[in-house]
Image 1 (cartoon, one colour):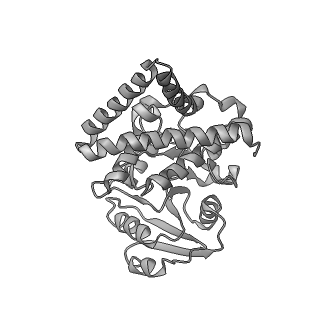
Image 2 (tube, rainbow, N blue to C red; image 1 turned 90 degrees about the horizontal axis):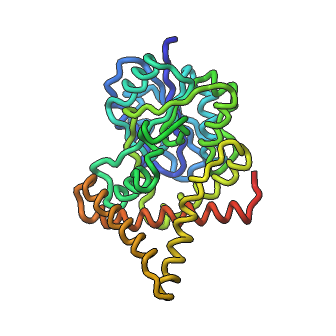
Image 3 (tube, rainbow, N blue to C red; image 1 turned 180 degrees about the vertical axis):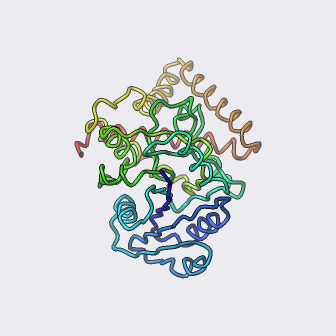
Length: 319
């Protein structure tokens, strides 16, 4: 089957980000034609001027619609696309020159109706963004589930960088109305319909994620609230590992209680763990400030996800 790519990008009030993303798409070492669909989801800061800037370099289609959320905007884009394989990107990513070539090469060797790719930190990112990227991708914090084949079983898609065939979209109806975890929900429904997913390691993107600790906490809190809902909706997918961040923060609190009672050993364990994060981040990023920030972003990630998980598990029965 000849692959015809349609790139779908939902957008809400981020004209600067879409400018950087479109510029990176003009630099692809990819000879085949592809289209790019920008779905402006009720933005007040519209990107029409940015679209016009690249209209002679890319096959662009621009749509403005009432605000309905990223999932519905992605579905809208896939309904309007003319390709037979859709690539979904978040507006806050930058695409390396080899991205489309790597996707095509992998799918031609081993075709699946859906794929996901990892993310990395670009050299232009802020120190905090690099630290957040470390926390979201490190083996010490996530177990390597977000971008290394030896860290995953069946790969669960992430909406910032995924692909899905037109056939699979039509069969599953795309993304659900879930505000958080809609990409994992799509993954489970793909599996239920017999479609296979895979991780394409070389199809990575540079993902900016969030620019402040507060925004990062809010994002990870949302991730945490989604998982118990998914566990209830798809009970066979539930794993004890999804509880680990909650166990982490409960144990962290208990370590100070034990310290007051004269038993500091548990706090020592946490101290050793944070030192390992610092050293590992320093080794990977070659920057003391990023290594230092990585300790705080990792703690933020655990508290955000863990608290969101506990709140959703015990105080919410939303489906």
